[in-house]
Length: 393
Image (cartoon, rainbow, N blue to C red; front, side):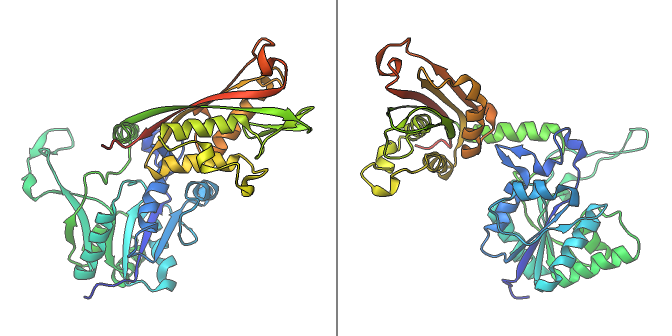
């Protein structure tokens, strides 16, 4: 069979994941600061050999799904069934109108699938019609009786651990799933087992040990530690900004509109908190300062909202494969009083930055009536940002 470009994927995400512990369905929990399902779907949505990504979700999870995969290209999700097998069939049926030649079937609980595994899956199904990724068994396996006694020690040389995406000619696996449903068979543990039952020969191709399924709380702890170890370049930057008061009836402080008897004299909206924070992030990246990226000499930044500056700085971190570890702003002023607005400001910074509010601190102090801030001629802010980047020379 010639290699086909009409390849789609069914992303199975309708399960409850109860063995993963508290925190809701595991596919919507975050790992490394990113939802599990986003990581799983992104690999397929960005793969050049795939034309359709068909998610299968629990109807109760619609809002969570939409929020978790925002920005990724996919088909409208279809509702899953009571079992994984029923959910896969629902996904296959949703793809019928697209007439794919090859379909991959992947568990959303495997967030670390690589582009290489996806490409190998497509190639293998194009060549054989049915194939699954596998990795060797490295431990000795025992077959035990109901009372826990060892009955046999199989030769591990012939044993393999099956993974997903499993790949098939679309018409063949669809027919096999339909037959299984018609015959009342709902006990298959993966799609390869259904293919075997239907009389197909299932080939294997090289999987990836990193392409593990998240099942237990311990899996999440281990993978969080692994991801953290990949971001070993820990950097801290600092920032400082000041703006004088002028005419006006409000101030923008840390992204929040604060009523006041004066306004800022500034080219943009004068948000000293966000400006200091942007400088801190750029400093941690060794990537210039806010003035070099947004020159006040350019008219387009006149009156600009400073949230776009912070989003830009965050994107610079993300583009380097990094993560924000902590953001901190200290406001220096006599008035307005920051304390009552502290959590509102923290929430706004977290929203703009896409980080949890627990990683954002906003503090305030006065200068004991000394200097320009003490005379209420303006406001100053200091900031620090801690980021984690992949280590590179």
